[in-house]
Length: 363
Ligand code: AMP
Image (cartoon, rainbow, N blue to C red; front, side, top):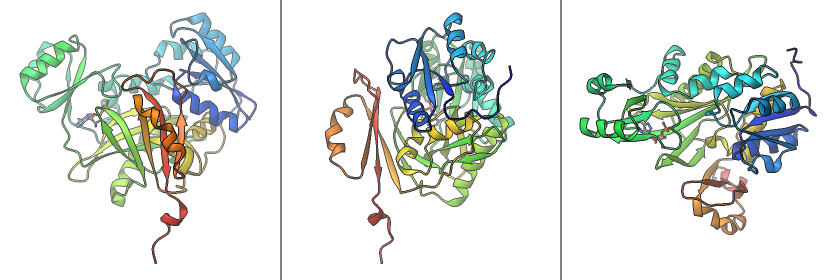
């Protein structure tokens, strides 16, 4: 497979997955003159609606995946649980960026934790619970039991404070491979989003301060307003992660700030991240454009904050408030075009950008 290192505007980007992240990648790509083709099983999807093409197929449909890969110049993915097999099929025909290695680690919490350790990234104390012997030997209580695979937005995890609760949670998860993490009494949650180009150059977006409820991200605030030492450690961990993965593309690293100020990695995602949505309206380059630049071999963009901002997710019925946000001059509204405002479903987000007058220091 001979691949030119730079894919100029006019080239076609293939996106595995049809969700809102794919939608925002396609919109950023279009702005730079690229076309996108989306691969997803659904007949319609937020990403396909704004893309030049859509190949419909399951992630195990080899023929459809080959048709998709043949039609594009480079492949990326917008969710880290894309089956590795589907990525491998595409990789036989076209470069997949980030490479399959990134999802191999991101898809399995124990593998991910081992990778953090190898990359010199501090993480939460944890132990495996893969069978009855490990269950009986587990000591990290109170803790959080998480399934090793397929958990996201707080799904597949349970807080446990006693051995009985631990055993019950493990039964509830169908005795699947799990990880027990010590409960961190964190001061706050933060994330680093790092881009790495084909030439190995890295850029870390300003660290975001994240608030979650019921395991789902609610808000991200930038600047995070934390001590410079904490921000520098978070940024260093993000860059170490991108370099250790030999990544081309984007990776997000979610972290806890412990009461003593130490930074502990929670999980990573080798794709644009919900906590980076503020970059569309308040950063010199958005995370979505940065991904397009990285995977197409273009120089990475500047990551300066243009204005202090706060992103709020619109979850479920909250999307019904769209009129209110349109009337607010500080609000930038983004709706994902999803039909059903199901409980817990991310329907859109709004970024509140501080007007220049209030950002100016008072005299
Ligand atoms: P996760 O799916 O691992 O990102 O977890 C979702 C959310 O649950 C995190 O953003 C935290 O708010 C909380 N959480 C996860 N792991 C821990 C932990 N070890 N200690 C305390 N809170 C946690």
